[in-house]
Length: 134
Image (cartoon, rainbow, N blue to C red; front, side):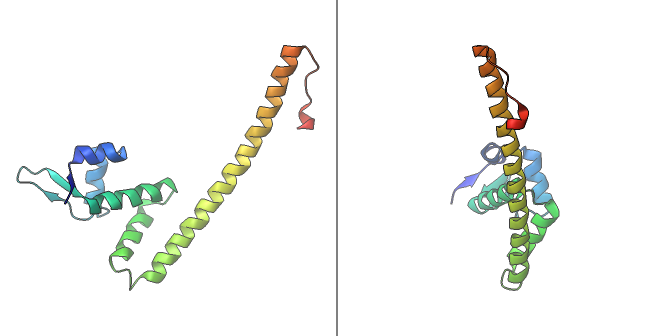
């Protein structure tokens, strides 16, 4: 069984050790065993959980929802409906984020074309473009 130190896990996920200890304290990470010298020992189970946490957090999932999800997951057969509802809600949230980002990107690209054309007109000495044409 492969194990990891807090420093290794911290580097692996780009998280401060204090965040890992906090996740453990609030029950987001399953019980982390310790050596006789009181050093934490992380397992593949912890690595998998942290990967899921990172994924969910990157989509904007709140700590409360993360805790809720992992609590449900402990007894998934009894909470399968809640798990599915939570994941569907998060998927809708991600879809909304993507839509907003695509709209913002469209506006950025519009301005990029406009200002690229301004630069081209400056370089060639031609007439400036008109924003309304974009």
